[in-house]
Amino acid sequence: MRIARFVVDSDPMYGVVEGEPGSETVTVINGDPFFNGVERTSVKHKLEDVRLLAPIIPRSKVIGVGRNYAEHAAELGNEVPAQPLLFLKPNTAVIGPGDPIVLPEFSEQVSFEAELCVVIGRICKDVPEERVDDVVFGYTCGNDLTARDVQKTDLQWARAKGFDTSAPLGPWIETELDPEDLEITGRLNGDLRQEGNTKDMVRSVRELVSIVSQAFTLLPGDVIMTGTPAGVGLLNEGDRYEIEIEGIGRLSNPVVRR
Ligand code: MG
Image (tube, rainbow, N blue to C red):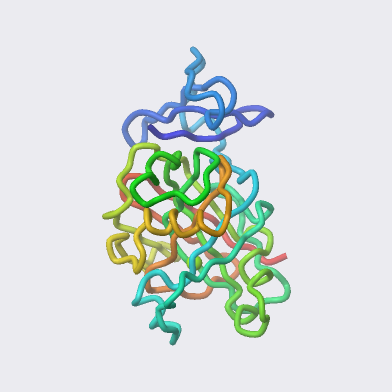
């Protein structure tokens, strides 16, 4: 099931997206599916008539995982870390489909990173790998935007990874998906730049959720960005970056500089 968050007039709502590409509909559901389950109403819109929002504003955090594809670690001259390399992005970094990525003034080198994102459905801690599916709500596409220059010069990655608009998510959450063998692509102004598959992760999605939950209590709506495949590069004003993940859909964002 594809769960989207959207607006028609003013208040954000959740809905179920159904139908073939180009003729999808969104059926409004009652309340918040993270707490109420999915209860359909009789109200239905054409997808083209709604504005999609980030499918989730994380209640507490976005957790990032660094260097989880060997080829990507190598392209930046890094080793695959012996211990998982985790970082946080604040929920104020999250934007939705079509929202502009605003390049921060303090960086000249903002890079795109196409990533599969896990959306947590239940409060949990110390989750064994074989129980991970019980705590996952679904999966969405994400862009782990990174100020590469600041990442090198700051001791902590808070600015480099956590600036406003550094975490586009969407277009919706797919709740029925096996995450272990999915094609991920990223296109810069239509040109293929990143191409990978989640089966090439150093640590698998289920392994990551388990590892992350050993450090942090996870809340419904928390998001884990699972790392990017090779091919990362820099964004400039006027660019557009589009991420597509097999079984989920496409997330596209324009780039502006304030
Ligand atoms: Mg990343």
